[in-house]
Structure formats: structure tokens, C-alpha cells
Image (cartoon, rainbow, N blue to C red; front, side, top):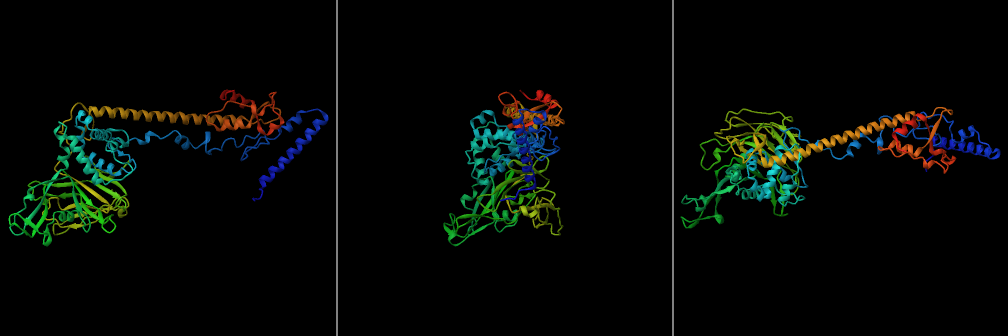
Length: 593
């Protein structure tokens, strides 16, 4: 049991004194049958001095107005004197916070639960100007027949010209019938999406749109088997197969160059693996390899970051450091060397954060083709990285010279350096007769999952592509067709209107709160009656407290302190305050009766 404090002792002592005084006065009135003004003043404690600053409101002093409102700069958990930030929060979300920073800042995509894998792929596709304009050029009647294509065009249109900082991807995800709560593999999603889009776009009469997926992303390979006895290739070796990405091993390999060499390496077929040569009509030793026949304008490398464990029948993520160049020369990788340069620029890095194979989070670092600026796309959040895919401010570039014509790699790290698994190290690689030059940057990452390279000689602006109908909303050298423009105009108009409505609502509320607080302080400053002789009004303490604490003042109500004759009984002496005529006059203007 806690011990009584000095304050509580004094309070009980005062109460006992008041009770004794009241009892004595009432006994005298009972004996004499007379009531004097002094008796009334003492019984109703009118003679008590005006309080000069109690911590709480005193019931046994009708001249105490302390504690009805907080001190200057003070606040309460609810009502008129809440913190302004809490009052603003009660108005609901501020749509203005979702305003895109500028027309040149990319927009993000909402994560619907576990759709980061889809968001990252969609951003990579949207940021490719040729693909974007191909989607925009599809005819309205084709869009109407294919909901997936229609929603993709709408989504791209919002990413292109919406005033919002992030776009709701739900309509597009819904058309694909994806489970928002289950994270899928981004590579599998891209493969399925390409297949679906090819079928949808085949109905288009716009040539560039009809084959935009194939034109940008499709290359071809051959699986060549060569007999070691007669030297002839198998009949199947002449067949070419399409590819939309090259799946490269990462385990045990340090660089993209090593992975490409591994991918194109020759496999010797011996023993039980001997090949049956139709020309020799016997099983013979042979060699087998993959030959690159044609390369697409956008070259995707799928890094095989997952290792299947047979004992546990589960996948384990490979988190070794893997390096890749800012520029890649592929001319020497073709089965028949090209007469033209095939220099590719790094345009996107898809990153898988986390150590588990079946969970984690996907983000994308993508280069703006116009400005050369890199951006990090993390669902709704989009951040500028400068001119390096992992940020510029975290490390210094480093270059070396080498007498043997080695490609020199400079170093750059992003964010937390190696802590986030992405950085650059000064590495030297031998690459004979490279057309890239004597100095390129080599980036390193433990989490890079997919790499996208754009053909340098191929400008992806697609400025010559025709779009059906009127086109407006010119941005990035790309304009929206009228059927998409109208929708974006309406969406932007609704959004701007919502922002304006919120601003007006916020201003009205804050102005009202400020005015109401000034009103309460003004009335309470005039409320005390400083002498017994001054006229005054009785007012309910409970009502006064409600009036001083509520944003919307209640109707003036003294019925709780009045008897049937409209007077104040002695039993209510601790429930009333003496109010000056000046304060009462103000009440008559600001409170309803």
C-alpha cells in the first residue's frame, strides 16, 4: 500500500476545514432562521481567491479555472487540444504525398502481397522505350479482345504519364489470375508473359507491335553434335531454336565472361554417352556444344543462382560474388563472327534479396535510356542511383593499366558497400581483340539474378514507329494514343481534384481548430471574477470542461446543477464555477442555448 503524499494530506485537511465551516454555518442558520450574504459567500466558497495556477482544477474553489485546457505548447490525447499531427492524421491519407516528384521521375508499382517479382519485370519492360511504344501502338480493338494486353497498355500509360508516384498494379495482376500471396520466380514469370504477349499481339495489324517481343528479345541457338570420326555434324545440328534469355551457370564461376565461355563450351561424349553417327552407322565419340546463331537487341542473361540439393530435394541460393561489365562485346561469341559491332550496354539488373531460394524480395536497378541515370525500383519506392547501377556516392572508381591489352575494370559500390551484395571490384580480364575499348567498368553482386543488355548501335527510342490515331502526352520521345490519353487525363484530373479537396479540408480543419483554441483561451482568460461585489453567473464545471475540450462546442446546459426552481443547491457547490459577465457575454455569442 502506497504512503499518502503531502499534497493528498493537505487536500484532506482543507476538505475537513470546509466541512467544519459549512456545518457551523448551517447550524447557525437553523437556529436563527436567517441567512446573510456572508453565509452564502462562505457556503458557496465565493470568497476564495482566484486560483493562480493549479495543476488540476480545484472543485472546492469556484474561482479556479486551472486545468480546463493544457498549458501553452501542451496537448492532450483527444479533442480540441490534440497534437496537430494527430488531428491531420484523423483526416485520412494525404493524396498529395503520392504525387510524382517530376515528369522525369519514374513511378513505382504497388506490391499486392508477394508481387515484387512481377513488379520488377514489368519495370524492366516498361523502361525499354521500344517495347513501351510497341505496346502503345496496339489498336484499341485488339486491346478490347485481349484483357491482359489491354491492362498492360493501361498500366504502361499510367507509368508514362500519371501524376502519381506509384501505380496500382492490381488490375493487371488480376487478369493474369496470379496469387498475390505466393511469390513466384521472376524468370518463369517473364517467360510466361512473353509467350502470352506474343499470342495477343499476333492479332495486331501494326507490324512493329505484332512482333515487338520477337524483334527485341528473341535470338537463336543451335545444339551442335559433331562426330569425332567423320567430322560431320548431326542432322539436328542445323536446326535453330529460339531463346529469349540465356541461362548461365554461376556456381564456381566469377564473371559473366566465364559463364558465357562455360555456356558455349564443348562437351565431350565418351563411353556410355557416345553418339550414334548416322554417317558412320556406329556409336562414336563426339563433341556437343551450343552455338549462338543470332542475337536480339535486348540480351537477357538469367543467372542460375539456385542449386538443387538431391539429399533434401530443396534449392539453395548461391550467394557468391559475380562480376559483369558495363559494356559487353558479343561479336566473337557468335558461331559465325559478325561483320558489325555487337556492343551491348548494361541496361538493367534484377536483384533477389535474401538467402532463401523460395522467399526473399525482388528489386530492379534500371538505366534510363535518355538520361543515362540509374533508378532503383523497389515496388512503390523509386530512388535515383546516379550514373552507376549501384549508386555513386559510396565508393571511388578505380582503374589500372596493363601492358597486355586487358580490359580494365573500375570499381563502384552502392548503398552499404559489400553489405548489400552489390559493388565493384578492380578486376582484370583478358579479352582478345575487344572492340569495347581499353577501359570499362566491372560491377559485382552476390544477389544479381538477371542481367539485361541493350545493343548499343540500336537506339531504342523508336521515334519512327507510327501510332494509330491522335497522340498526345509526349514524354521521353514517346506519345500516348488518344484512347489511352483520355483515360490518363481523367485519372490525373480525379487525382488532382482529390489533392485539392484534401488541401481545402485540411485548411478548413486547421483554421477551425486554431480559431476554436483562440476562442477558448479568450473566454477563459476573462472567466474569473476577482471580487465578491462583482456580478457573475454560475456555470456547470462539467459543461465548461466539455466546452473547452471539444472541437465542436456543446449546447450550453446548466440543468445538471439547478434545482426545480432554477437555483443552485448547496450540494452542487463543488460542481460550479463563477463566470464573469464579460465571459458570459462571449458565451452568448459562441455557444448555443
